Image 1: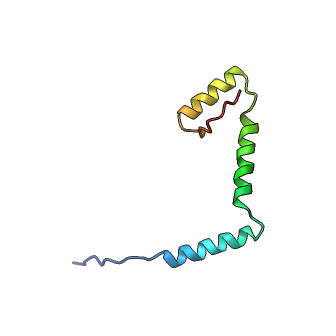
Image 2: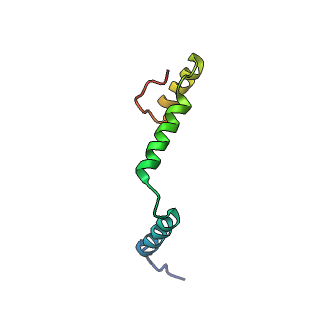
Image 3: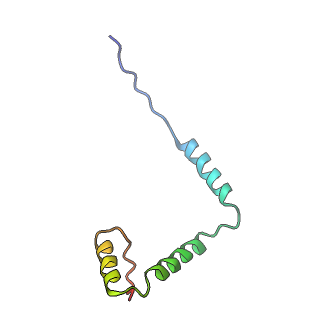
Length: 75
């Protein structure tokens, strides 16, 4: 009968290497604040000026957790 051998993997070094590769690929000019601001502006533009039916659908998606609740009125 064979017995099971317990082993563990420490992925800390691999995770550090992966993170370094991601940051290297993003380059020195990547600005996370600018990216977040741009995403917020795009979200506002996408959901601004909805007609009543679209607004109702949007509200249902927010309540269901499909879309984030930004707290802003999108009418």
